[in-house]
Amino acid sequence: MNMPSSVKLSLLLLPLLAACTEKETLRYGLQDQVVYEDKTQKTKRKSESEYISILYTNLYQQPITPNQLYKTQQVVQSIGDRTLAWEMLLSNYFNKPGIQMPAETFMRAETDSFINMAYRRYYLRRPGEAERAWFRNFIRNRSDATVEMVFTAFAASDEYAFY
Amino acid sequence: MKRKEFIRKAGLLTAGTAAAPYILPSGRLFARTNTPLADHVVLVMFAGGVRQQEAVLQRYLDDSQDVKVQGNIMYNLLEGAAPATKIAYGTTAPGGYNGGQPIPRLLSQSLQSQGTLFTEMRAQSAGHYTGLTTLMTGNPGVAQGLKARPRFPTLFEYLRRHAGFKASECWFIGNTIGNSTPLLNASDHSEYGLAYGGNFFAAPVTFGSAGIDVLSNAKPYSDEDLQPMYAMKEFLDRSFNLEASAFDSVRNTPEERTRIKEWMRDVYRRLQSGQIAFPPVTDNGDAFSIGMAAEVLREFKPKVLVVNMSAVDGCHSNFTGYLQSLHRADHATGWLWDRIQRTIPEMSGKTTLIVAPECGRNLNPNPIQDDNDWYAYDHSDANALRVWGLMAGPNVPRNLVVGNENNSVGRLTDIVPTIAHILGVKDEAMNAGYLDPLARSLFDRI
Image 1 (cartoon, helix red, strand yellow):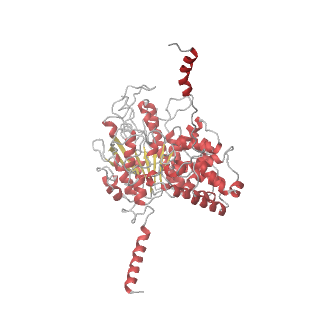
Image 2 (cartoon, helix red, strand yellow):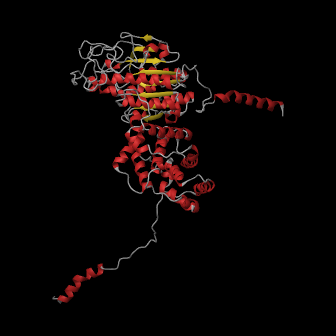
Image 3 (cartoon, rainbow over the protein chains, first blue to last red):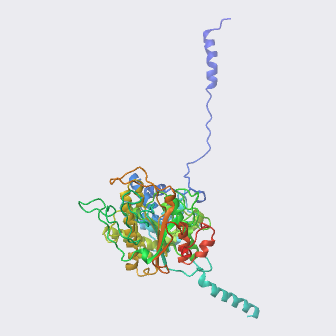
């Protein structure tokens, strides 16, 4: 039996047409989220080079040079009390130009924002309500609590040494 | 008040009044168990593997290079005349021979004549690190790994835990951050550990060019400036609640840290203006370390300070350099003793100095010859276990020599119980169960 060629062509294209159904797009209603660390999950101690690199970048918003990193690491290793070494290092950093710090007026005027910023910047997490309340109270009651001292306390703290 | 209640309260009050003065910062109830023999101890770990033949035996080139010249090149420490010829251990005068100018003697009386010399002691290892660990722990250090904290408590831990000393009263001045040196200030022992460790500086690094570059520009904070910072840090640390077992270093109190930081700032300033006193001949890292140890003594008047030297170890490839380093180590140690007596009144006459090498060197040389065609020496045989020890200070018999070449008296593991004895906690250290069972206070071997 001879079929017309147009029918043959139609029969050949039929599977292709069947395959071209519209694909269903699933939407789950997700939104972008910023993920924060949890202090209870910080169990790994930063190595000296990690600590120094992260601290330097944090304070100066630019990476430390490899040569300076190596030298700093050696000096830190040469001091038995690491907290003392970090405090000395911070004191030196705060005495050099180029450090990126918010103004004292910002800390006093927008204390909660400042506290949130400090926790995010150093601990990569939000402060708990108790933590925020403690700092709010401390900053409001202590005129000698400067941004530099707050940053030093965070950078020299135990939690900052972990990730 | 009822009679029964009155008696109970009165009893408690009496007990509390009696016990309170003896409660130490460590939480221990009773203070030292033996009468201290001195207020301070300085231990010089001398100085990188010292061959017995060139040190106490004073054979100079005779027993090493087959050159018939004997003599004492450590005349601040030991009694004996210096070599008369073939002088190569001193400094080099312009146009002169290498090492041809001996360093003038600093002490009018040698330390040997001021104290007791143990001429033939036994090291428990022929290696540096095990030797240093032995000196610091009183334990032979078998199975002690490199780049690891000592497995057994250090003398700092015995003293801080049992005598209640503060961290700033216990110091180790090292000469390098290499190998395990920065880890010798505390063990990782579960009953002692970092909570009782001593302070540490690797002097040539902390106060050398790197330290000056990285740390000398510190802001001058006062105690008052730092008070809010410490309050915030305390809150943050309490919130994080790090267990003591997770500490990675010794911890001073905030007050101690502030004091140390102020002192460091002052040292950097004086280093840059050339105001720090060093031994007259300071041309190697050892003398620099000794100079910085003297600065620590001057400022903190610690109960115990340990300082390490190691330049002598150049003997692996350069015998002339070894002689020069040995001569300088003697010079630096003599200077340190003189410095304590003359410039630190709080420690003068109240300090015991102990000097001991961490190991000896081989009987036979290796094939390496230096510019004088003298052979070098390693440290791996039985001769490398032959060492000596010297102590001087209050209650140390003067001008006494104990033992001889054929009669070994004393072990390097004796150093920790000796220091514990001097500072009043001998029984605690001995009974802790972590010392070499053969170790004894050197005072008990006299």
